[in-house]
Length: 472
Image (cartoon, rainbow, N blue to C red; front, side, top):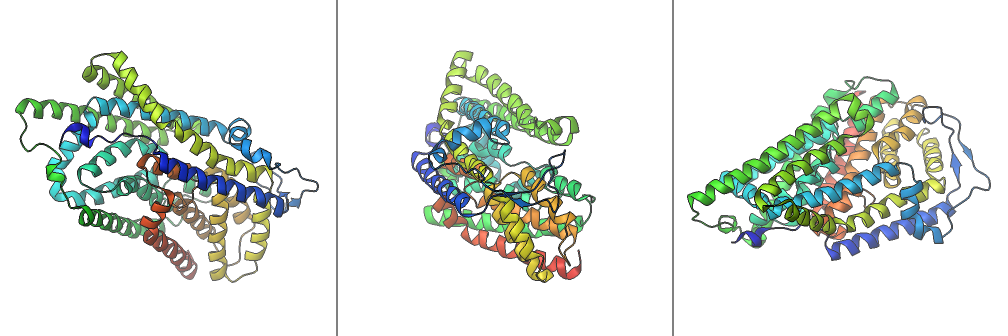
């Protein structure tokens, strides 16, 4: 098979784009209607932006976004919405990464990397899935990485194409693994780190239980991904050994080995930058991790492009083509972000929490913990971001605790609700962009991952009930 036959352009597929946009528009309409149905209410905030317990009140004559502004909400949210700077940063990063990967693809670097992987791991390809799952889960669980790891998608996509595995499996190696990693957060600074700080407890409290859950879900996730790979092979027949020429000259082998080494070195350097940016307080506090990652990646990609493509002009040409291919992701991100904007303008999030909390407080601990988990799932639909959700939920739940439910259990319910839905809700920007890149529709995604989604949901409830039973 020739190089061009294996190359997988990193772009948003039209069918997937239209499907995702249609779903998000439906969600926008649904949330817009809710703002006219649910009473507007709000908690007061302290000087640090934290919610003040027992300060909830209904808002009289509250303004709601008129229907025509649901249409302009994506643009308004980008200009006026809370967290809009982060959205701008994500859009810029995606465009730059798209351009950088186009350079690597045009240079033959991605093809060379997959050649090396196939040659070394073909007979151990299922063990490789276990290794990838562990690495991705650790990066998400300990460092809070997810959208940053979309940089690996072209590698997984090309590798899966060579293996005759589906695009769904390729994107699952990122979305599923990091989603479960978020669910089983051990030291994730953006979830368990923020939550424990707001609750006034140590991040080490209950860590043994989180580690046990991590290990159990690691095994489950790896088994499921291997199951998907074997099913793909059964459906199409595995022709991976025929993906590359059986005979190649020593000159070609040497040239490809050098290309692969350069790309491997680039990825290792970028991953090192990502990890360092997440653990160095001065950088982490500024939220500049993605910026440093992008700079490292584009510099390395341009250096490889200049060497392999012969000129910076050709390198720039490929970069612009790659950025153009990912430009539809801007629309998807803005549609997803506008859901939160409409809910905030309608002042319904605090109202939902207040009445749900009142009901949960009157229940037995076992029933209450299930309701608490479901509450986090509901809030997550409107607020996908971990930090914003933590600032709303954790102070209220820990300062006005639920009878029989410890702070550790409250944090655990928060983690489950925050992580599990990263692979479920269409309002999660990383999910919809990832599906768009893989040209996998949202309905296809649900169908392919339904069994795993169901198991994660049931196990999350089981872990919470066990935590109540043992008095975590």
